[in-house]
Image 1 (tube, rainbow, N blue to C red):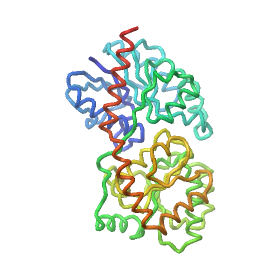
Image 2: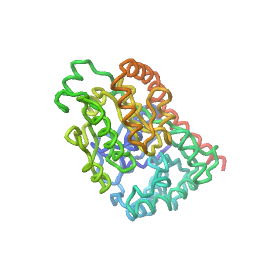
Image 3: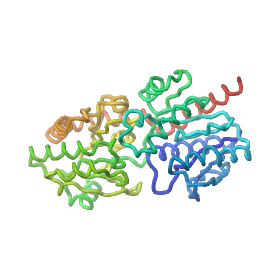
Image 4: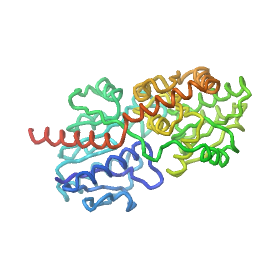
Length: 379
């Protein structure tokens, strides 16, 4: 079988949530199914580390698709030419974008519909592109995979997709996220926070990630305690907005906040395992991979009581109202003052993280791919 895959988001040093999903599932599928041929379609020069086996053929299709107009050209002009040339049996799109003009069995991985719920968080052209096209992508695809039961129900409710057409393929966490020794934790803290413990946020500095209320909550926590704890923000600033800047400007304790920018994979493993707690109070997530990464690292988690996050966290995290800084600050207080609570959450977190592995994700995605092919053959 010949499987053509959209691998636009396999970018060295710049993997985001969907990029990690693509990397972790595809490398396992390639290894587990050497009898099949994979054609990876990139939109720029590719890194050899993403060619996971002898059964992978890399292809570059231009232009670099990072704007709605370029999305249209790439998926409706360049990609159909690739499909015509290589005649694959099936098309897999891990980022959910598909070709509406191509006649091929297609599995789209639609991770979430955040743009339907929070369109104001996105630039004008992007939000209109997503809201116009993704319902069409969902209906065009022979099958859809998504990363949580929450997102599955959202696809049903928003787009009227029949439940039988949607498979849930959970995310996982890299095996690099593991507990560290106390000496290693001390060294990491010395390097980043002058030895102080810290609350950690991981992710792009996007409005949906709710840094405004995290800043306000941390300010409230610091005002009410004499704790030496700091707030460490690990992620790129490409989405820094006026609202974020204003909330930052209002902080009384901004000197206790440290921005690392985007960090390497190895550094992120150390930062996570050395954190006092993960503070991940997004407004909306289709899954929330850092929740599992923290749990696997032996770090307590504070996360939101909205969208998919309660489903992912189970009983192994403190759930907060992301719209209420006092709710987030109260959870910070509880963790700071209660060692037994921290230990309890760590143990529950280890158990919860075992449910979500990339091996399971790759297996579920392969099953979804086979269902897509079987359904198409019947038709």
